[in-house]
Image 1 (cartoon, rainbow, N blue to C red):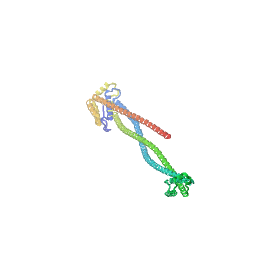
Image 2 (cartoon, rainbow, N blue to C red; image 1 turned 45 degrees about the horizontal axis):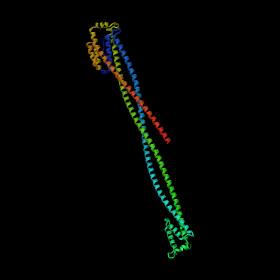
Image 3 (cartoon, helix red, strand yellow; image 1 turned 30 degrees about the horizontal axis):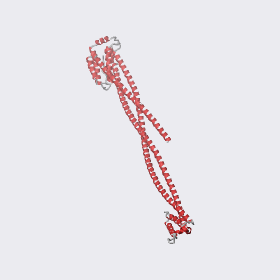
Image 4 (tube, rainbow, N blue to C red; image 1 turned 90 degrees about the vertical axis):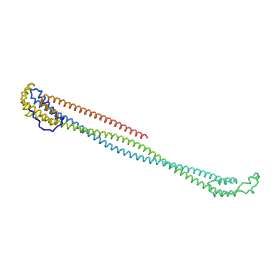
Length: 489
């Protein structure tokens, strides 16, 4: 066969690249067909048919992979958009919760200040109430003592006036009544002096007093008769003054008592209102503190959820980027494979290869022995040309792909172009199939891990949603019970 070297149309590829693998597979299939096929169809035509089938299959796989990646890329876009929205919503919710927490903290501080102010007012009002009560009790005690003195004084004055106005009153009775008046604390000193002078004038001398027997013999002759008009007038004047003073004292006491009761009632109302306001504000502060704690807990949970979403987004972004890079690399390699196959088909379909095939491989070969006999009948020069062309082709590809395997194959072809090369190509095909199997297994493991992670995330998300719903239900129940308690109170 007259194989011509492939033209240099692609850049050098790695040793294990799919393009090199495709070319190796094409060479292997070509050589195997040349060696083993004994059909009525020209081996070169069969090789071209197989390579076209490989090209069609490669195009189909390339398009199928592009379709799968399009769906995967759409999933990546959806996940990025969904998580970005969730993160944005979480950030907005955190900002709103932070504002609520700050507002609650300010309200708690304001309520605390007001409660302290009211406590100070209550303490001051209670002290004022105690001080006013002490003053009132002292004033009441003074009033009772003074009122008692006035009462005793008026009683004594009434008795003295009554005795002095009686015509049958004797000196002893008059002296006793006047002495009682003279001993009163409220009687002025001038009045007391007048009473003393009056009593001294009314007292007879000792030497002028009759014998004691005369009292028994004629007691009616010693009735004490005197004129006491001035004393009675003074006593009545004192009575009027004492009555007026007692009236003023009673009025003053009544006014003081009324003023105290009014002030005490005002202070009591202030204390009661302040304590009621303290109770309400204390309850409101406790409720606000509870709400603040709930906001803080919700904020912490939202921050944790946002961090989890951000982590998931980062992982998904990295995964999608890696998958995109792998897809682009595979698409590039597949394109290079297809280009290599098309170039091989072009070369195999050229006049140099096809003409030699039609000349040396008749189209109507029936069995393998005839083909081998025809090949043996070729001149030694043509065989060397074919052998040289194949070796040159493999050596050129080994240099382009930097493949030691193809270089070794080219060396073996130069020595034994069929038996040894066939074994080498079979080994190469086995190695390539093993690598393909390993790649498929690794891809399956990655897909399984991704599916497991997805299921785990969905389960965790569902659990979070259920717990959130339970929390909202309990919060609603607490709010309803709190409202019921307030309504009952």
